[in-house]
Every structure is written in C-alpha cells, then in structure tokens.
Length: 327
Ligand code: NDP
Image (cartoon, rainbow, N blue to C red; front, side, top):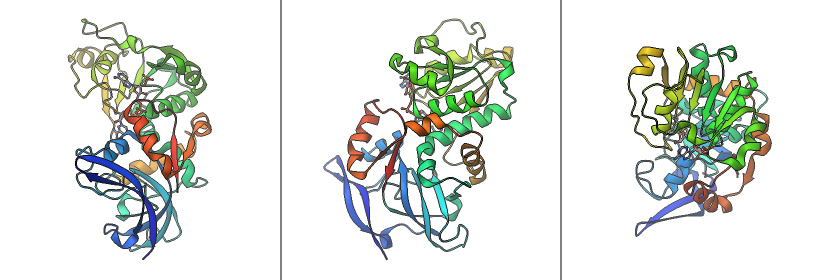
C-alpha cells in the first residue's frame, strides 16, 4: 500500500473539476502490473475525458491520462519484471481505467511495452499516442510499398501532434513532404520539420469533380471528413493514404472512382486496440531510425498544477507542440 498524488476529475452538478489529490494504490483497479509513473503526455482525448465526454469516460471521479511511462514496482506475471522501464498507451488506460495523470497505474501485463533500448520515460512521452499514431501511419504506407522515388507525400493537419511527427519521420526517410496546414504562422516550424512544400487547407477545399489531377504519390491524413475525400482525388495511381483522425469530421463522402480507376488504397490506422507487438515495433523504430530530433527539442514539460490550462487549450484548438507531464 502506498499513497500517491493524482490529478483527478470529479463530477458535481454536471460540472467537471480536476485537481491534485492524495490516493492509495490499494484503490487502483485490479491488474497484473503496478507501475510508478514518472511521465505522461497530453492528448485531445485526455481533454475530452477531463470535461466529462461520456464516449471517453463513463464514470467519475476519474484519473485521466491515456499515456504513461515509468518503472514496474509489482508484477504478478514476472513479465514485465520489477524494476523494468515501460510504456503503456491506449487500450482502456485513462478512459475508464485510472491513467497516467496519477503517479501510479495498475494494468494488465498485455498492455505493457518494454522501454526501447537507450530510451527513457521522458523521451517516450514526447511522442506519446500521437507519435505512435504517426509511426503507425507511416508504417502502413511503407507496407504498401511507398517510397520517395514515387513522388511527394502529403501530410494533412501537418502542424498537429500526429501530423508533425509523421512529417518529420517521412522527411527523415527521404520523402519529399507537402505539408497541408491551416496555420500560416507555422510555416517556419513545418519547414524545420522537413516540409519541402507548404499548402493551405484550401488545397483540399471541396470540388465537384470525382477525380482531380494526381498530385501526391501517397499521403498521411490526420483530419478526415471532406479534406480526406478531396485528398483521395489527388493521389497518383496505386498510391496509398493512411487515415487516423476526424478533426474535420467523421463523415467520408467519396465515390469509388479513386479506388477503381486509380487503384488508390485507403489505410485505416488505430493506435489503441492493436496487438502489443505492433505497438512495440513502432516504438522501437521511433527510438531508432525514425527518431524526430526537432519534435524532441521543442517538447515542453509541465506539472500537474498546469494541467487544467493545458487541457483547456486543447479544447480551444490552441495547443501546439508536445507536452510532457512530469510527476
Ligand atoms: P491536433 O489537434 O494536435 O492536430 C490536428 C490538426 O488538424 C490541427 O493542428 C490542424 O492542423 C488540423 N485541423 C484542425 N481542425 C481542422 C479542420 N476543421 N479541418 C481541417 N484541419 C483541421 O490533433 P492530433 O494530431 O493529436 O490528432 C489528429 C487526429 O487523429 C484527431 O482526430 C485524433 O482524434 C486522431 N487520433 C487518432 C488516433 C487513432 O488511434 N486512430 C490516435 C491519436 C489521434 P493545421 O492547422 O496544420 O491544418
């Protein structure tokens, strides 16, 4: 039994209020592995959980945090071992299972990824679920045979958490990346991440034609909705588009023409429920040949006392760069 601090959200009269509390590890859910969390990272989903979105978190009080990294202090299965540094992201962490905004979590062993060699908890949490999703998006393109020689690759929502890591990985792999972004003031940052061409969101404004001039060999789409439908019309024959997000909407209104006349592949990306081995493979690449030095250099540490403001910024669309919660 250990007492610990957590940023916990209570529901009172329809209002959701978060703050630091002292809790006890005995009150954590059952699970194989008790982890002392040293770092977490902030995601839009955490902001939804913290403000009572019932699609994310059903009951309160609740400790959000869909990402966590730290050291194993108890292990019923022996794997992972006590003392091992580990990462946990996705599955139910931070949704209806107490998450990384607390100094301890208890989770099933099958959720736990061993820390890649030479890495540490802070570096892992600079990437977090967003970085993992970017890596999975790139991995899907590569699996379909995408290569720099085929032509430019587009990244939509390029200044966002997923888009910026996808951009930096692809640029590091030698792809010529076209960054599609609604933020003119992020032009320098996107160029620093490796973009060779910058387009405004109007490049994906709705057009009546079912097909447009092919412009991109492949693409990573993080926004969904009508921009994704427009992107599909501009992909070269045989090209692929990874799709992970819905900030521009969950609806996808398209025709079959990009698929049957140009052989385009639309590749779905889920970072949450996939088998652990797929997560491990991407984490080890992020810690190796896919490392993103620009993203790492710009990440910012915050404490639990800054969580409220940081989560509000997410909801207002004002978040920028990777935020690491340090316990
Ligand atoms: P961010 O909020 O950090 O970035 C999203 C970016 O999309 C923004 O920075 C902006 O970039 C662009 N954008 C925002 N609103 C619109 C709009 N209305 N139309 C077009 N573009 C818009 O989010 P993340 O990068 O963390 O996540 C991106 C998406 O991926 C989200 O929908 C998220 O839920 C999803 N996601 C999915 C996961 C999965 O497992 N499938 C895991 C993680 C995230 P700019 O200004 O540069 O255009």
